[in-house]
Image 1 (cartoon, helix red, strand yellow):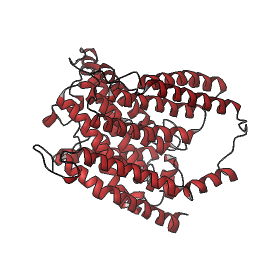
Image 2 (cartoon, chains in turn blue, orange):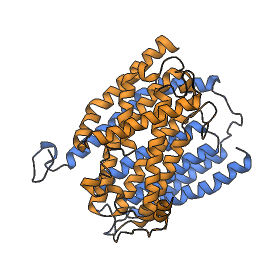
Image 3 (tube, helix red, strand yellow):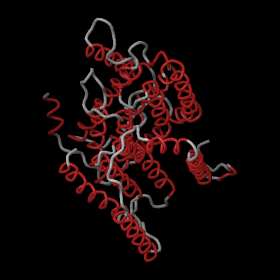
Length: 177
Length: 265
């Protein structure tokens, strides 16, 4: 894509991404919060595509859709007020969480601006790209798998504990078996 | 044509208690997702919507956005049976997205490419459905479930849930949903023909005609299955997905790696 085309997608996209991210915390509906986060991360995928990093872009679109729907589903299942009709607030411990968020944003922005990013683009055959591939599929694979299986256990365990009768499977009236 | 216009011109049905944003955004999202999926299908050499070296992943990514769209329609509708339809679809897709994605991984391995056209070309001698029957057997029902086709149409089961997730829509909303569902069937039938049945390869006839015949045959078979067999219970479907289809899909990937190393590499 040309420089102008990229800019025309990038800047409005970035604004939409930030706006939807802010609204995640402005809404009190769990369904809206989850889907707004999906919108934010989906637009981020489009930004990757606009910046010509195709693989990251399509992967972001695929993974985020699945993950955010799972998250929304669990939020709706576990929250006592999923529709936000009783005036739930998405932010707890406001002052500390806000200052932490601002500090992290500033640190990341400073890091992004001050780093001397390499200007050359590498093709798929470059040794660096191969090295990243071997690192991800080799040594680092163990930590990825460990994280993935831990999350799966947490999901299954959480569902089991949330069921009527909990882990002892004491049946209550109307339970599905 | 006249019926279509009446559909467009009809008043929008707006439920009384609902989440308006999600309710109104769901049909366009469903339509965009289905059109992006359709754009990835390689119809003939050099003839397709968007040429991407990662087309298969974007196809799966577009299908992944069907789930939030149906969830939004269900949640936005704000009536018990409608919400239930949306939830059913999420539960179904959590279980069936994995076999679908893993079947895609399995067919991409022999071609060493995520480009649909390259996957068609690697099947010039033998279609993937014959080399990897397990991946094919997992793909077809998962694809039908994504496209909300009977007997997996639990989200919009018209008899049990009175239209399910889409029960509250009228006017152009209902038209968009209907159009998107037909596009999804076309995209999935086309992709099945391309990835598993060697796409445009075939003797005598022109490539595009072979592809069209195969797509029509796949779509007709899927629709016939929907008419012939009764709707499957949700818990039984989920049980089969989690206990059988996902482990089997890992087996299909291992098998794909084996045949790739032995015959393709």
